[in-house]
Length: 355
Image (tube, rainbow, N blue to C red; front, side, top):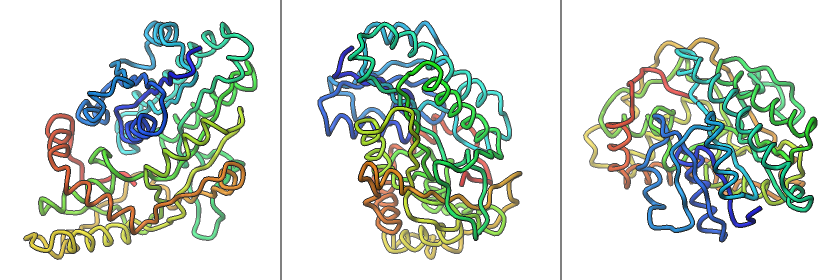
């Protein structure tokens, strides 16, 4: 086993690319970055690593067993961090098949390849190896306004094809620890935001629509509540779990920032008004439009991250106001990236938006 190699799947996507950037800047590990390059993962996002000799990019699918076997045999990584997934709820409603294929079958394939690789390691190497699976709070279902936040012991009650497929993959990962002893870890995070997020998600879509003077679509009454987690904070948590987490354990990662969607869009508009005072679309709040709610829209998510805080010493550094400001400024400063991904990759403009 090569202690300086980490296999990251889905590392050209939003959270994955931010994690890769953090690993390359904070430790000497070489990252083997495997990504299928679907609509949400693209080369423009990983151009920042082009001159880094500790970043090796391979275009491929976690469902390709021969490819995974070959990568594990060639690089002998000490850890696998699995970000690879279809993630957009609206897309899962319109076409669930790809979510089943990637999130369930792909994760199974990755686990099987990993199990065979891990069995061939020495006893010491087996103890040091880690398989970290990145999941979501959506597997827990929906909360009322009065219910306590999700903990690691909250029963799974997924309500969309996306969340059901992620719940299934979580169960597979857990089973491979309990059945085979594979040293797995799972993190369940709240809604991420920050640089390099694909523009069909709530925050980047609102920012880019506001730039262009387009409507800012808000589902239903806008009172759906999410806990918002700045992506860099999430990546710090992932790295900490990878280093210090106990095999077989699950850790919830939250931003301590529950906000309803309408508040969030209004706050983005206020930041845009301040940062772009000469915009012809000021005040940007005038662009808000309410649209028909999506089927099965969960009302509230909330994460209790007491476990990772007490056991591993993690907590978010960014608050919602500073995080949103940093995010808006990044999209202002990186409009060339936005143009590239929306022109070449954005497959369909939708009235609704993920949140």
